[in-house]
Image (cartoon, rainbow, N blue to C red; front, top):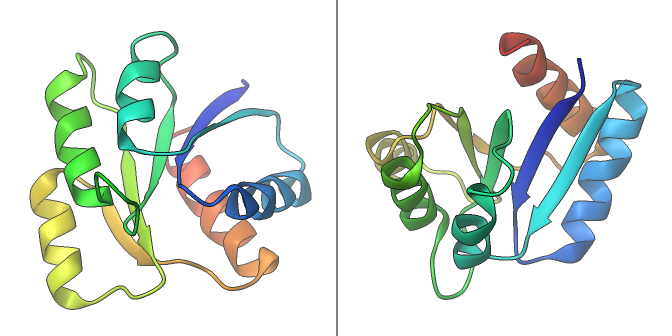
Length: 125
């Protein structure tokens, strides 16, 4: 089954990184980039993804605010993962309180990101 993965990240270079990891997995997927929280909110109604990865550090609406807003908007529960280059215990607590399934440090290599994606995609297969 083809998975639809939404990445909410203001850095387009990160999306290229994500696509490389997905390609390395060899799985069928549709990947969409929302360059910010507002774009994620407006696009979520049109095409609900199977899983959402949300970057914490974004202008206008940070990842925690985005997850909380998406949780209020969504009819069905979609797993959301908060990612950040500077993940801390406080940020993990805030992310989970907002509705994130997991809060993880952003992997620094394609291999590490591929393993993380594989873990979460299998969890929700």
